[in-house]
Length: 392
Ligand SMILES: [Zn+2]
Ligand SMILES: [Zn+2]
Image 1 (cartoon, protein in one colour):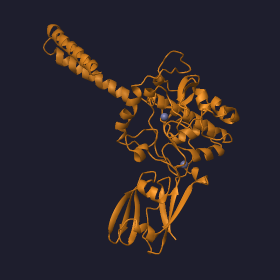
Image 2 (image 1 turned 90 degrees about the vertical axis):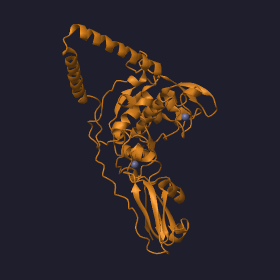
Image 3 (image 1 turned 180 degrees about the horizontal axis):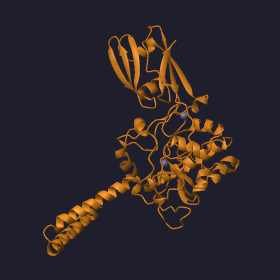
């Protein structure tokens, strides 16, 4: 690559000096500056025209740091040429050149009431009081909220409406589900399956889930699998995807797929469908429950912002019986863990835009300590960071 750029540089240098010689021979003394001005005007015109083109803008407020985002987010994917053909294009067109198909950005969005703001903490009434900590939702809260998907599907929303709600500014595209994927099974064997067969062996949603929920799942799973392949997640090990839910997606090579007719129907009814952004398969992150508000990827995981992983209010997952987790702890026990004297306040005001605690300040008569939201989560045995408290 270094030599490639050097060669280009050298070639451009040659062109430059040839142009200079030609100009000196053919044009009067003012000719070369005039040419430069002409080239400049053409360049500016092209810039102005091109500024109006490009992909549709995301519908949320523009953030300055996205300037960085778009470059960083695309670069690792662009270097890859996955040998996948688009269904409508039987050539060996690389996956990453998918034509943007119908965009559903214009689809009416469901009304979704903003969820109530969480309390940032109140003064400790007495050393004899007991904290009642509450945690809303489970897991990281980025991307699609599976509990929200479930209740939206029960509410009659279509899978595309749901996916458009959780992933901002996406388009839908199609691949060929007969494309091959190499799967490392739990038994250590590598199997070559079609994408269709791979999806059938995923171990996620039960067969009696609402159909639109299953369709959301399989479009997201297909997209996620492609994004793993595009990022060469396991290429060096000689396969495309492993069977672990902690790494790729939970998959069972021994699953009795015939026992899941609704899942199979959802795979077939969404055959080949994937979600794209700027023509690339998106990183279809999802979590168990967002607890009322999803979050921007960079606010939870750090790194550059990804335009389609934006925080959104979600009133649907609150219908789940698993929405709130409660943990009680006496003030004495809590303050004993920090050595700040008599506890005055647990300040939870340092939050992500989606309400997740980044840092908690433990304020006492003998000083103040700060712990991360993750440390507080672990201490209370919670599985999420949308935490608030009251006393009883
Ligand atoms: Zn893996
Ligand atoms: Zn949710």
